[in-house]
Image (tube, rainbow, N blue to C red; front, side, top):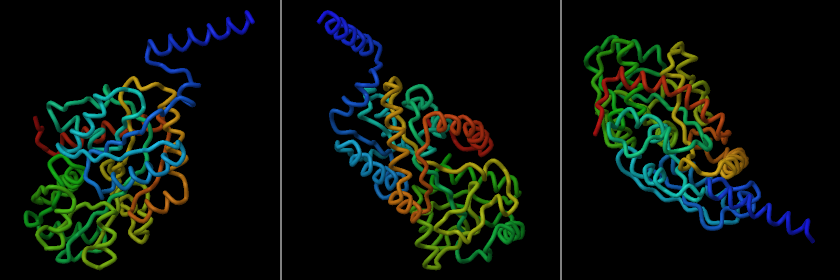
Length: 333
């Protein structure tokens, strides 16, 4: 009896100590969490690539944990509003963000007074998916590959316009890098989001833009726009016939990095919960049903570990920083 009481006393003291420093013993993280619904805050509109990934993950996670997982779209300020809400939330593993490269990485270069510091206020959990992007041209551009596009740009210096979904966005940084390194003298036309860029391409208002698979694939299948190359190290499975820019000889870092969808939690979230979330992400994102769902919209399911996510993040940080500074993008308040 004395040994039993001593053991119980030891456990109680250990739990109290763990709670006092914000660290829960693994047994609590495994069996006591989550005790209420999990909220995934997506800082972008419903229907986009981030939302598609978040809902696929939420559905799988809900089935595995037996608790509701709610997707909450909180848009505004390039993803800053929703991301800041997570950064300020209680670090209990119940409020998470599923965001893009922009909200979790690039925004810190773009906004002078960003209401959160991604590297200080958030802890990376898992890259859920990567998003190879398509270099799209309108019907008026006589190009089917990058060699033909380069020839077109060289013959029309100062007469070509490219569209982006906003100052400092992925599309702006990559296409401005192309503009600068090829000496194309293109005009940058910023729009309010990717949908507007696609509409401008369909209306021949601009010559080229960058599109995610979610919006590019239906238009390509309908023959309304053409794709001349794919960013990143691998082809987009849904458009497998289109070679990457790297395959076409454009090997700059700007064409190697891709957009990604990642999950993050408030700093000081217990490590046991972070690890549990990452393990669940690996299981859910690597399931056949999720991989097929994402492949259909041009995304590649990942579900890596916090360590792998951080290594990728740190490696890409300097690339994005250089691209932003070279682009001349406006730093916003």
